[in-house]
Length: 245
Image 1 (spheres, rainbow, N blue to C red):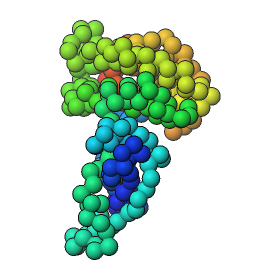
Image 2: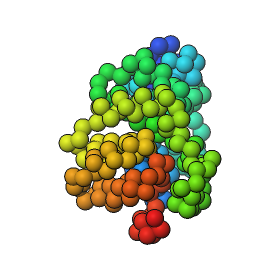
Image 3: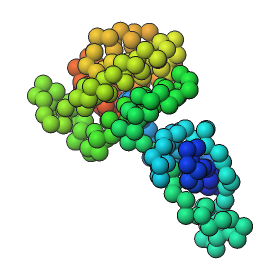
Image 4: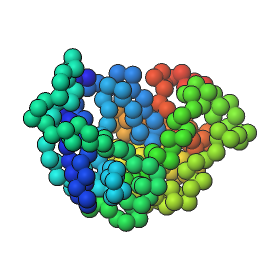
């Protein structure tokens, strides 16, 4: 991973300064990916497209914020702060990923300006809902889901349908996603599976996918056939998981 400069932006509403780091290069080593499309890469940290002001709570897309400047905040070995950089830049808070309620609010207020931004907000709200399941250890989560699928437990609660707001957001996402775009069709199949609409999910998976999506499609298909609705982490050895199922 090779860090780039810190960017300084202003909140479009109140002008409060915020900062975020950039990367010149990174990699996906030790990455973790889930069936809902969420991914975490330690050596390739994501920057949110939408954030919230730390002072006035205004939610905004980064593209709407004025970029005030940048500075080399990732120097190694550490050096003294650059004299030409205003001290308030160093003190500026980092931008943040939103919480579930914030995504709900952004969607209800229609803070998006196009289809892509609305899809992004729907996806982020869905991912945020599933984050509580991502906290479970991968091994115990897999074993619990596979071994006790006919005996509902606390860990098997469907967190998606437990929230009527998330269900409405996923229904909207299903309307937005295009079946002719493979990346969107596979997300549609996963959303249907997590909603418990297994037959619709399987029907969405009928047409072939490009090679890079075939393993994921196979996993979602198998989970839907087994009546499993939880988000699942993609195993590094997918063959092992499929054999266990």
